[in-house]
Length: 257
Ligand SMILES: Nc1ncnc2c1ncn2[C@@H]1O[C@H](COP(=O)(O)OP(=O)(O)OP(=O)(O)O)[C@@H](O)[C@H]1O
Ligand SMILES: [Mg+2]
Image (tube, rainbow, N blue to C red; front, side, top):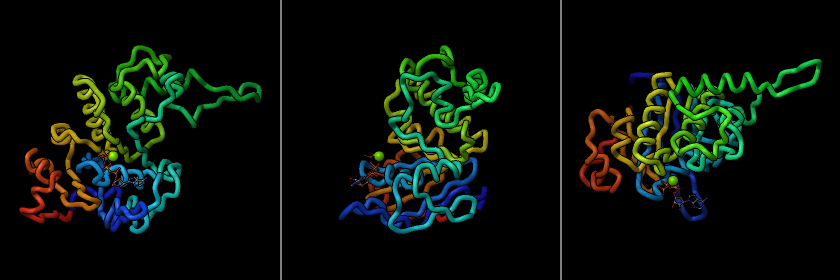
């Protein structure tokens, strides 16, 4: 054991009718760790993180945060416990400014002579601060989000997660639709989150990205965890072997941390 566990899931089962999307899966995440979550199409990655995000209720299994059992019955529950999930669709409002998106649902209100006003100046100031912390460069904080590039939008979504003081940030394929330079930027955001002591779950099909930013790698295959690898002690070929199931035939090395 090294760093304390920020989050753990044990014996997670999720069925959709006859389909067993998660078949008694264990998952863990340390404080200040980037955990990659990989696996073939339909392996159960999105189902796992939707459970983590409170969007799905597991049929069986337990989840703990900081050693205490938790049970999320809604995304709001997860949010309140510091778990922010950035879905691939991002859920940002295109026709709103960057700052409005970062503060969506938790606007700062100031009362003047008893009448509440949105404190736009303060929200802009804090938005700028958050973006600077992540080294996100945007043309202007008043820009509508729909005019931003994919990478900039990822930055805004991460800033929004930081704004709710999320300790765990889950990202589903954040680089899938991005150009090379933008991918670099998002990988840098992820590293910045780790430097701030946050825990990150990164779903990616890109093994190169996974090798670059992750500390460990969880491999799912057909609803089961078939690998828990230390990135520094693993080659990209091995990771691909696990994803395709080739490695499974050779060795059932499941490192229990
Ligand atoms: N809402 C649902 N209803 C029925 N079946 C579902 C539902 N969500 C997921 N599944 C099934 O559960 C299994 C796991 O799906 P999941 O989306 O978690 O895979 P994934 O690893 O995210 O794949 P991909 O890489 O393609 O996104 C698949 O067989 C899928 O068809
Ligand atoms: Mg998926």
